[in-house]
Length: 154
Image (cartoon, rainbow, N blue to C red; front, side, top):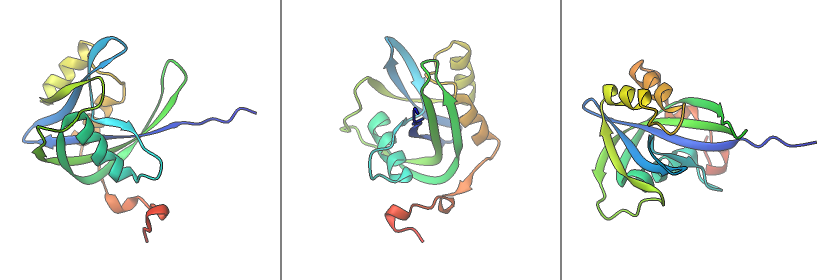
């Protein structure tokens, strides 16, 4: 019997005065835009992973304020991703931050910029626009909706 193992990831919607923080990166030989996102490391909480991935992919320290939701997508290669999306605000840029391999740098975009990037097929994942659309629709949950027994919650 084959055991199904989805990939657990985090992503963030970081917003400030009508702009969203994204990352510009190389993926499969092309330049794309994505939410700050990545895999959760062993022993790491979801929220800690969201902070870390945002810093590693944008060079920005952020304040994670809400859990937005779980987005599930199976890629053409057959890998299923469970993306836990968080909402946050920027604190400050870290100009000396070491960005992950393949990351070009941070990009601040408006909603219209995001829609244009979608039309131009510049987004890395089909999960990007739904996350931002849900943010615009006010979908959010308090962080204490997450119970992390390994971290001593409750």
